[in-house]
Length: 325
Image (cartoon, rainbow, N blue to C red):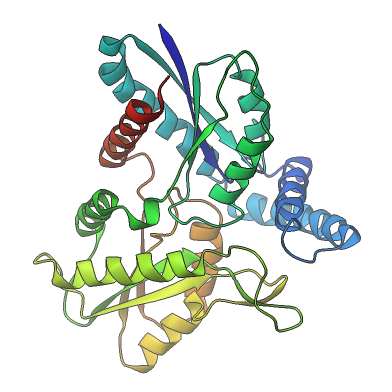
């Protein structure tokens, strides 16, 4: 019987308010970003120390715990159930794992752990392809040294242009979304650099074009959907403040622009993420609270929805059919 390892790879976030857990997560995140941005190691260390303290205080004060890793584990569990029904009749044993870039279990470790399988799939749990998401997995795949005729891990990505995923998004949005007179929808993505610290174009794959195409295509699909009653649909970015100039408009800028047009009711859907986490919850809520929009509601990411699990199962099964030895 063939053994296949399906590894869902998300960014990963600290799950408690522990200083050491948050320090480690930030340290790995900055080291990861430092592969493509100019982030001196002393700066990374100081930022990790300060960030660890800040997260400890904030998370404890707000009784906040990031759900991202838990959601990823739930996504893996659901996918395992669905693939069991598809694969076992074909004499294929599929084992689904969750792994992370910035927190344990690290993706490198799970790749090593499953190196004896006939096929390994690395599923990028981000809809947007860039150097730090699927690009990192591609690099890990090329670094893997097969033995005994084994294959290098296969990276599953390209979700930003997938029409079937777009249908899942639309059903999810219209199930959770609020519509009505003068209502607006803001689609948010994880922002990216558009200029480095010297004002130049970043010399790495930022994923900007993929974000723009996914946002535009999804926005148009919402507008022509008969279920839609949003009068305004905007695209915004959840940015960081390191490495140079980031994408615009930020969420705060988009909300203020809507408010200046007299719009008081806004839904926010973080379509650029497959799972909710600190950026889509705490950081986004902080920006929203500073705006003058009267009523703001955050719609959940697609998270561990049955429809998303079904989509992933079909996607993985299709890849296995092509790649399986």
